[in-house]
Image (tube, rainbow, N blue to C red; front, side):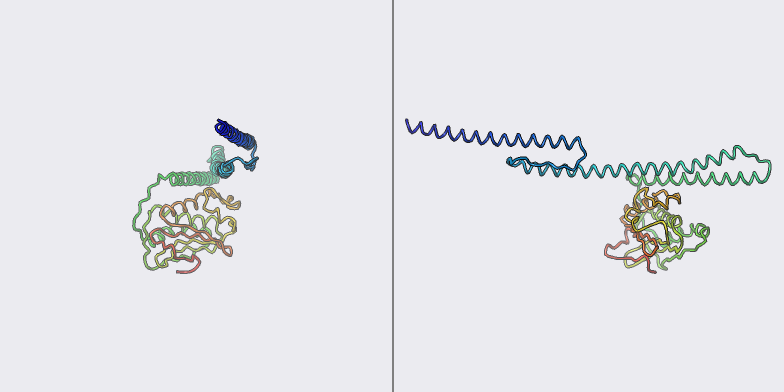
Length: 323
């Protein structure tokens, strides 16, 4: 009987100890959870970099805190990225609004002058013709901007189909370059054109290739100040479209963002740049498994596009050397 009583006493003491230990652990858990709730409430109300902390040792709560801090850190990073993208979006909308409003306002002014003028003498007729030509140029500017917006939107949305075919890039490059002859004449300069004697065949979309060449040359005409060079280079299995020119509107710091949509330098804004031409070049090149690069050396700005089927990942093409 005494032995049984002793067992009961020992068991009671043991259970009491276990219960006391559990109460202590429970109290720690409750204290830690209350502490975490207070910190989370503060973090929710304030824009702070505060991280969850431990106020006492409570089992595996340290692992929970570490995991929550990782989740909070990822949330903060995404929030920062979202804010940056929202800011870029607002800037883009402002830029587009400016690009559309400016030529339309100018065109409206010329139309008002036309409506107020008379055609009673030859001088007035000539002046009206000048006004009409100015209105047409402004309308063309808006049309080009809207076309670029539409094209870029289709690319990003994945709704533009690419018809891949074997293309003689040598002929296509020469034909497209010849279309800009008058533009270079108006600038009072003649570009150096390097085209290989042998055909360069690539697997690509014809429309996309033409747009790439057109946008690269147009960008050079808008931002360039001389030393124009248009080249189609071939080295082993790589074919590289290269357009270079001297410029005073692009700096080294612009290279990382030069292919972003709507990105324009402060100087290029005065040239009525939309910031979409090079973005379209990159999108087209990447959709055809190509790649595009920009460089600035000694005041010479160069853009090179390597075409898809002829790309060799280990080849290196120097766009500043003659083929």
